[in-house]
Each structure stands twice: as C-alpha cells, then as structure tokens.
Length: 135
Length: 135
Image (cartoon, rainbow over all chains, first blue to last red; front, side, top):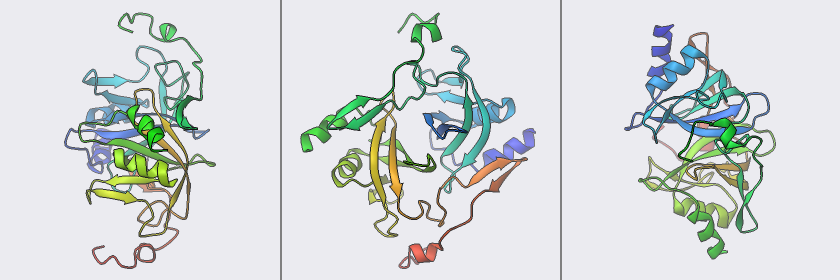
C-alpha cells in the first residue's frame, strides 16, 4: 500500500509551498463542503486511513478533519484534475463540515449587491469544540 | 454596480499572491467542473459580465473562460466560504470545461492502486482550440 500511495503522490503537482488545494464534496448529494489544503503527508494519511486529512495552514500541522469535533469525513474517492494541481475528495461527511456549525463552509452567497447568509448553523460551535477558549 | 462589486471584494481574503482558489460547479447537477484562481480583477469581471473569469497563472493574464474555445461558464451564483479565502462559482457550463475536451477537469480517480480515467473527451481539443499549435 505504501508503494501504491507513492504512485498516487507522484502524479500530484504540489505547489512551491508543498500544497495543493483540495475540494471536499459530499459524495452522494454533490454538495461542496469546504476547500482545504493537502501536502504529501496529508494525501498519504487520507489514503492510508480512509478519512480526509489536510494540512492546516494556520496551525502548520497535519489536520485529521474531525479529530477535535468528531465531524469526520470518510473518504469515498480521490480525484485529480487535468493539470494535477488540484484534488477532489468525495467524502461522507459525519455531521457538519464548517467550524461555524454549518453543513458547508460556503454559506455566503452574493445576492442583490450583498453577501447573504444562505444556511444556519445546525450545531453550536461550542458543542463542536468544547475545549476551545480562543473563540 | 461598481460600488456593490467593491463591497463583494472587500469580504474576500486574497492571498499574498493576490489570488483565491475558485471552484466551478455546474449549478443544477452539482458536478465539479474545475478549480481555477481569481484575483480582484477576475471577480470584478465575473460579476460585471455574468460569466466566469479567472486569472491564468500560466499566462499571467485575465482569462475569460471560453474566450478561445467558446466553452463559456455563465455565472449563476457566487459563494464565499467561512474564512473568505475560497470562492465557489455556480455556473452553467456551455459545452465542456476541460481543455482535454472532457466535461470536468477531475477525470482521474484513484482506484485499485492507480489513477483511472473515468471520463472520455466529448470533443477533440483541436476542435476547441483550432489556432493552437503549441499542443
């Protein structure tokens, strides 16, 4: 499996910062859940563990999605684009994807000259992140 | 309308390179078509013209999607994520999105230890780009 994963990695053109943008899409409904970033380690971990793992740019560390909140993304399929510099993860999102408690991070829509909220939180952030005190 | 667009831009957190990743999704089927990049000028042009415009990193210029191939993306809706550093364009893709002639750029799927082609070209690239001689 390690050799296979190295083959997967060889086709991905990571940027100069070692990252590629990764789109997470709910596999059955087609809903876009979020956009995050992956480095080689994140791709390895995702394929090995069958769950979406990203590189957290703000925390500068591997981020197993849901490790704090429990909102895991089970990986159903990994796709690569024509240029090899973007990946698409078809996932089965457990609970919500967004740290605001919304299902999708893309909850603002440009309508009638303003950004309009198009989704409400389904769960309170303080329930998702009980130990967080930094907001 | 210019003022409104400046308001739209104010909420977007462009990276140090002046760009944000932009996901293009077919508005009715949910299919992910491609991932590209937008700078302020591309967002302005997209909202103003009602069609997807990107910043071409390889050509370092504004790229009105379909300007050569005719495969325009009519903009139905622009969405912004929670952190403001990624956008989602719901579009009505005219023809195919990918320069290879495939509907979507994400036509490679990681299956059984290898990258598997999951879509065939619907149109020949030389039909899309008759004037191209550089491949």
